[in-house]
Image 1 (spheres, protein in one colour):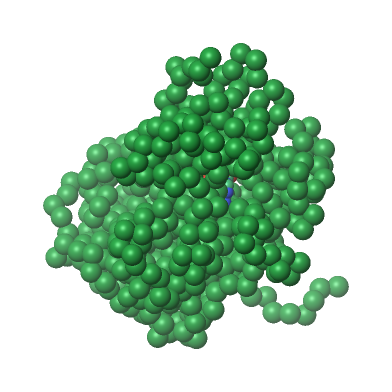
Image 2: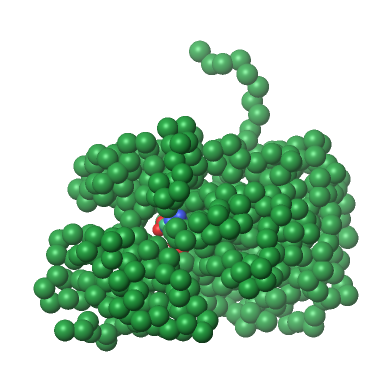
Length: 542
Ligand code: ADP
């Protein structure tokens, strides 16, 4: 027997409709790419322009199932386009501009995108690769006529001019809730780029689950600054969950440096913000040099790579801002877990609290965990046994785009994340490593993440990375690579001594080297493959 409730497909346009009706006057503030100034609009206006965008896309011939690419920062125009594209049943393909030009060209060609909407910043880049983008029929620059540059891009037009030829008299396309709505390629921390194809339903459910109190915990009283870009897996849901809840949005545009972020956090009264650790490294350094404080910020979400304990402590003890450590991946839309405090741990404070907070936390409803060994046998949730982490849920990928015949799920329908970790009896996940980065020493596994975490706690260390290097007896041993704070040159002995007592003795790195910079991926993660390449000829001290 079927239930007798209404059929109300979970379509993305309902989010911006709700925001416009219930929170129509709520502001969306953006830092303009043109001149760094602030532009102000509202959810009601965003919806109108998204409708106009949808109508204009239809006139371009864009229809359900077509891919429309963006190379763009977080701004209100990107948001209008984002809702406009899914509003005609087409697919927003947010391309990560930090990838190598060859990768960008490959991805756009693989996706067979029909139009490319790009910020001024990326016009030279697009011109360089345009010859390799035969599927792109037209380029739209996200600016107004006054700022439109001379360009050779096919059919190039300024967004404002393009949009002015349209109006909001449009009815959102009534596609199936399982229809594709978004496309994002993994940046290839491991292997080549793979397309994850989100649906309306998967994105709505993901945003709903993320908005609940133990996770993003958003309300109409919040002001949210998504530093994490739309092109980094749906800005961790914020471009959906903020309008869904009526939270004010502050879009940082192209300026993600410490001073620019601090200015926005303070002038717009931001209460919640989210980004990868490298971004917060910049902000914390700036706060320290300026002796500044954070007057309105309550929570900072840190994920994408492990949040070092020292970073959590700095935010919480020096600035009174609660850190929410989050874990996830493109294939998971992307949120997989959040480290919020369950009641059984509410009494924790000091070191014990920070021991818990280095963990990646527990999953929201809609995400199921499984921990297995290499043979697929379930492992105990005892907080000590390491295993391969597998996940299942309505917002987890079931296959990659245009690779539909390659199975990626196990016998029980779980997706192997490629991450290795432990789960404790309280249900908290702790990621040890990517399976490819874990250091295999004498049959034991050493967590590079744990060592990095401890090393960055040293007062002279800005950033730390640990890789495994060959060892005749132990197979591999850890090598610590350090970027010192400006003007400091920490000695190898001092840093290794600092680490002793904080990790098991046999896990202490065999050596430490200083470098000027550590290579990062397009999503801000330490690029272990490049680092291993850098130290290919390195030999451990005898
Ligand atoms: P890519 O693999 O393309 O860089 P993702 O953003 O999808 O893109 O990366 C997901 C991976 O990032 C995870 O599988 C995990 O290894 C790592 N990761 C994400 N968040 C965390 C975290 N909080 N702690 C440790 N690792 C993390």
